[in-house]
Length: 225
Ligand code: G3P
Ligand code: CA
Image (cartoon, rainbow, N blue to C red):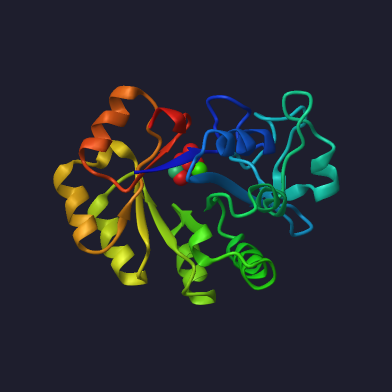
């Protein structure tokens, strides 16, 4: 049962910061989940929302700022917004990284960065999962490099996600945990896919999805898994 820290260990540190990812490593998470967008000068920025309004002392859409401008805004008065490279360097193969593509424009840059770390820094494909609710982006990732493990995100329908996963030979299905039960978990696994539900936080919810024998759990508090 893999423990995957949602947006870093979001229950303990500001989400999607290097501090949150370090906390996930300290808690011995098997993987971290994070969200990405592009800056106007083409850097891969780690943040959940399309704007910086919720997390920083600034305002506006990420894709209207350069990286240098984004670095001038602070999260909780002290943390900078990280780039994906910075997170890769921090994690340094200590766990796998689930990169969630939030927009349709990030697949090319994310694939290039993954390929760079595989070619130049001896990372392996199993250090990565690329997931998205935007399935067209997942198709693009697969067309660019079919070796990259793909997680099909769904909050609506397991059967449709399963059909798409078969179509693109995905690695895993990442469903809203409330869509899961014993039967559909088994069906997904029998077709050869891992099951990584999100976002499972309370002990009751964790026990419930564990009883389905999922392959891993995406949680704000991975230490409770
Ligand atoms: O990747 C699973 C989960 O993170 C999807 O929802 O809104 O937390 O990005 P959200
Ligand atoms: Ca996410």
